[in-house]
Image (cartoon, rainbow, N blue to C red):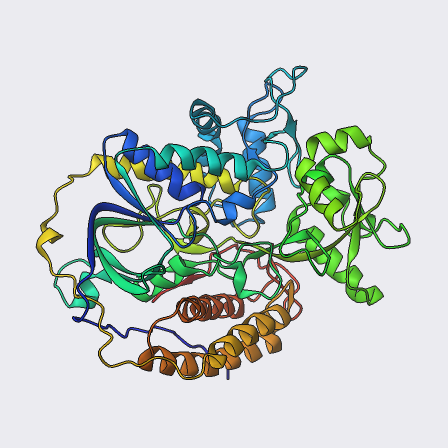
Length: 547
């Protein structure tokens, strides 16, 4: 019997602490989606507060290397970009969403440029910019800032956000749960009216009252043992929205980036797909180039194909890694286009202009998430979601390279327009948001429970719910999740809040949603490959999980 579990964690502590912050719009997350939404709102005259788990820019966006896909060259076309996105998404992309995002791409690139973002130039190009090509793209359409595009976008927008008088910033605050009228037993449509958050510096929980809340919290790749994501990617927004009553969709589609640096001292360092776009080869230690055995597009096949090919070759040969070799290209060109990767690898004794780079796949991107509409609305009034934590229908069963930052920009634009068009007054302003109650909990006596559960969760998700799956492995994961849920529920009920506990609680919810979604999909499509069902079903369908 399959074991399906629902982690509601609806424990609602109320009425002891009095620390409260009030704002008109609260944005949770300081990545590309959160920063651009805050800036767009402020430039439209709407004040807001931006909450970040760590320093403002510490997000997955900061580490994005490749770039942003957009039709900028006359030889390219919107239809080609749309076709490439639909093909990569393996039948599950929503074409109306794809068209909306692709058509709005050039305008958002112009918006970034007008705000001071500098992209790599090419005087010989008709656009004036160097456009690269990545896996799944039929044309060179990825505009970039060398191999640190995310850092250029993040740091530029960060300075504008910090200096804008209408934007308040709360750094080192961890969101715990949404405050909704449904949880408070207030009649009418379920509405979001705020958030409980942990102030890491003062070590206290604060109540944030807000007329509108936007989740821009990123993905959940930290649910896996090996990931390219920073430590902040713990699925907080997805878990909070699920507990509050939002639907989630397509959580089984977790993208594993094919090439992360394999080195004992290199934590989560991504080797950009743009290297393969510029001619890098995937090889074994003996120089055997193996992608021709897996796909006619060779190294330029979409990420799901390349990741499975690497996984297959590693298991077939019993090796811990494969190699990415760009040493046959001109050394000066390699250093010019990939300065960050060149310098980082050099620190580990690898000169990529003369030696191949040891690489392995790692969990990289959450293609599913909170169900939203064209303007970022969730199932709960006054609650928006955008960026990696959301499900828009853009990515389908596999995200096309460099469409992620683009999605953040387009949906921040749409959400900002919608928020600014609404009546800024709210009848909920007078509602009492109960304070956080810690009167019945004590300090934890054995934190080893948290650290052990954290390690166990990430390891069995890697082993049982990874690149290649089976029904038996998924059932084993579901069984382990049930036991973990009970332990975490008891810990959360009886002990004071800690950051590790908050993040583990969220990761268990996300892991459950991934496993439940994977068990429901009895086919192999895109990023979800299950040996029990290797074929495609004739009719593509989304996996939507109801609370």
